[in-house]
Length: 139
Image (cartoon, rainbow, N blue to C red; front, side):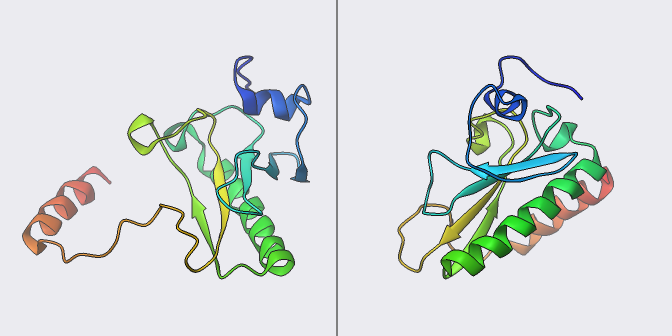
């Protein structure tokens, strides 16, 4: 399993930094975020170091998603939030702060004022179609 000795999440996986561990299996770990957006905010990560989604093997992405789902179900049962966001950022432009792939399980309350949503506005269909064609070609 790959690890980065400077990565805080790798240190948590190794047990060098304590955490409030919610779940652990062979491939993943989930723990409470110590800088929570809201009460119950947790993280699901692969144990192996992968900086972002682009370096994460698909089977490991699936394992992290299963762990996040398990945590989200428990958060919903225990805290009964109005909703839950699953949030994942890649790169500085997306405000990724720890460069070890992680999926936030973020409980939400109506009116919590947590800035995450960008609002709804009608898109330019020609521009959407042009971007669709570029993306589809890259697949």
